Image 1 (cartoon, rainbow, N blue to C red):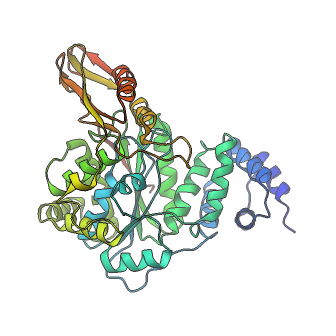
Image 2 (image 1 turned 135 degrees about the horizontal axis):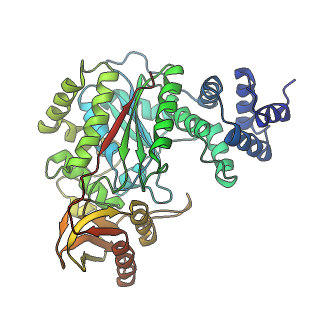
Image 3 (image 1 turned 30 degrees about the vertical axis):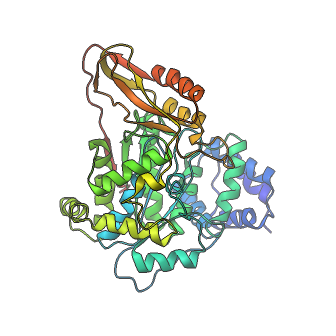
Length: 439
């Protein structure tokens, strides 16, 4: 007979839970026979005692199998996925998906919404009038089969046990547990039926895990558990000590993503991360023999316009305007107050409090502190300075997009405090620190 308390006690005492019992526990979480109090006790025990690799893999697979798992027979290419641990000014998924699809991959990009200081892919995409992100799984699969890609939100069919467990973790101070983070991330991604997965694990003052050692440990655990679960997986540890792009805010980041695809402007930091992640996916999926060959393929689909065509097709497939790329000003809303924040002194930008900038976007109305909050897609920052930029007194540090004059002034005061100056040029920060293979 299965007794939840027995296995909670076992984990509390630092002992291993057999895989079959973990499966029964997760089944009870999904069907409601395990109470919230029991979930909280279990997650707290894991928070303090950890899990070995066998337990971590068993928990991940049980969470994956608590709902539907997509199957993809008869496709002409690999099913590929990407996940980021979240950051500020990061719209990589929006351009990575059409680039991969244009190279012959199939990418069911099931993404999330922003919460706290980090932005969400779905919120950026919903800045497009009419764009829908919720579809039944059969519709998602049909679209991916026909077009190579979809960019949608997670429905209740995928890993439902994770949704319930995460809600309890959120109110019991057990979010920051690597085994629970690993199972939560991978359960949803593996339910997509992927052949290969690439992970963007952030580190720095704007990352979920600010310490490099913690980010490295998380990346290693994610890759190893994914491979133990039957999915090829690599991770890049990337810098989040400043916004990745030059914009932060939903419409503003979407416009920057479109500029990247169409070749109007490509910032080097963003380009390095996008090409790094996409090249790993192409090689893991067997679409390129080497990273060098993958980079050439990716550059080709950008230069030829094939990636942009995939993006435009996706907008049309998911309800957006067919002429968005030609008429951005017609469809993408602009904030009422848009003015530069001018530097009060001269110097080199040496530090940026990335988390603070993300929270300023939230305070402007462009993010949420609770999942049910509504957001204003128009607000945020554009033209953000970067570490290593030389700024003269009176030059703009950024453009602030606000709903009112009062909001602009409040954001300006906070943003000024978030940027540090030095008299000497600082060392340029690394963008991609390390490739983790888990092998």
